[in-house]
Image (cartoon, rainbow, N blue to C red; front, top):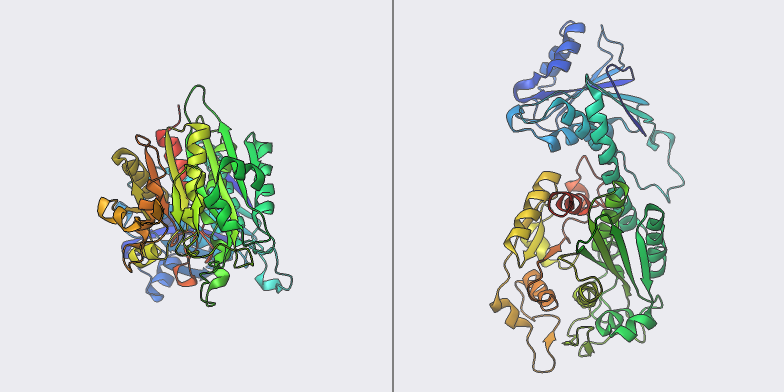
Length: 494
């Protein structure tokens, strides 16, 4: 889909904004005047109020050249921000993706959004909403296939909006990369094939290194390899290094990449197990962020480390009661093989610190169902040992529509993973506080003095249908790419 900027444009469908009370912005007022008030009459007949996301779809109004006019609400003008504009454009694209060829968006300035910023946000919203994962659908009916070929953003002074939109296109590409990875079926995306896809980032200037099991064994990654040992698919650990600054320690992004999680010997119930193809959402977010920073040539040093395994109940699978030795030298009693994400992350965290000496570490993982119980599908859980880093992540998440909610880290939870048989156990055995206990486990593998944050994205990496957002499909969201990109831009670029 081609996105263009121009002072004026023609097309099949035109889209304008409205706020509370069905108040039109200047672009809408001009169309309504040309249509002799027919837009406001139709809006009144539909009981259109201008609430955020509400759509008045008006067919062939006399006096206008357009076959359809979409009036889409942004809610209260005074509180509408750039994200509101993105969702406005997203609703427009979702509404016309399979029913129009040329869409014209007419964004206007809002009290908190300049005209140029409104145009750039509209472009990003349109891009994100256009995403579909149709790779394996061979029998789509003609009316189900996308027809939307172009989106024209009609506005005065388009040059400034176009410049920002060109940079934002890199973010969309990173989000799409993450969504594609999460959506792929597990028979086609497994540790080896995932690693090969990451090698494609080398064409963008990212240095990619892939570690195989023999090397990981020499490094002492007993926890990571223990999870993988039940699968016929061997593990991989991939590092991706973008060098965009001189003489600066990198920020390290670490991702959980369980390409399919049966739970191992501690087998999951059958219902919903197919969704466990998405248990590599953390690794996908890291990969997407690396693509985004490389495409926009970020002036920062960023390293991504992803641990890739398949957790299967094979003849050689890890057993409850096994004790493994991690790369850090600490030992873990494995009481539940379905608490596997923390086992692969602990070795990945150690490797990232030992090899790259990062200034900051952020790990992302679809780690616990407990975080969904606590926060639903609206926020990721944030666990952090540094207040400044936590605040920066909260600000970045708010700005990008990928919010986080800070959760506690406390010695009382930490004691729950003590065991007389090893340095720690991988579950507490208690029914509450599961996401906190998992974070406390990971904290034991972060060196003193290193700012670190853990993002539990189990509720945000993918969402069920009722939670569909105009900017994303009902399944893979690509959550984390925009958040990480904004954090890097705000806090780590020269």
